[in-house]
Length: 485
Image (cartoon, rainbow, N blue to C red; front, side, top):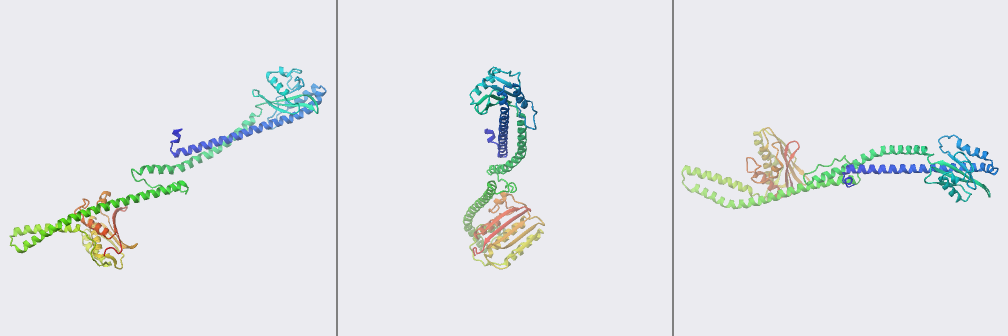
């Protein structure tokens, strides 16, 4: 039993439904067959009652005049008549006894000779005689002996206060078996037709209901290991409890994905913020002695008479220190500076600055600028963001590749995107793309994207990158209007 209960619903629902249908069909068929049996038995008793009344009316004068031959003729007619139509009711034996329970006449004289005491015919008639003795002598009665093969219907032969004897009609218990079998077969055939219709429908509907539950269960079990695929909306289109479970599962899956994405962004923001604080702290510590060394070198060059070899060495040191200063300056990004508002011409200036590098690689630039008036954002910082992203896209794109740019205002935000068809980045590379000195930045120190990230967040905006299905790396930036000015 436990094995059946542990089965999947895709099997359990059809099996239980099929069992219920079969049990119901058998119960209905059994009830109908039992009802048919009772009706046949009632028909038998009714026919016996009618026959008994007819025979006792004719037997009374024959017994009154002791006319045995006439009595024999009367009881022989029902025995010898042919079966009519589909009614199988026919008495097998008719017996008339007198008041001393002796045989007056019998339809089969050899088995019941005249004047033989009824008790001496056989043990069954002895029991029947005792039952007749207990009757009131007025009303007819059915006598059913459990071990007997016959139904007995006993009718007193009397008129007013004169009682002459008793009429006994015997019907074999299997007399209506052929008719009963015919009715039972018909009932079973109807039941089989009903089962043939309901069982396939039950199997289909049971699996139709169970399959969504099975798929939800399988996907729920996969959540801890991987993101399960969404359910096919055509699998269950109804809006009952299972349909609502579909909707709830789909919504839960989307909420979990949004939560995971939000957590990733939070972790990345916290990691970048920590790196920014560390980098800024190191930059401040380096910047002061670095400025002193550059000042000392400048003084040395201005007031010292050095030979050419020494001067060449000092120039080399100065260029190295200058490079260090520029790198440190890149780590000290501050958005809180005064600047004019961003104008449409600033966007076109960026295109002018980027075009020479794009031409060297024969790139096609898809440019779309929908700004038609100035927006309340610092022009210097936004230009820096655009230049960094576009130069990064140009650098990542192969010869004769494509770079697309789109900028405009939507939902009270400045939104722009940069896409290129260069090398696709993995999820791990994207996760570390905005970190300073990232190993994902080939051929440079990676401070351009780091500076871009810092400026965007200081302006209250967001920057994201993702792979598009058409083999494009897509950078998207949104900055609320009225940011730091």
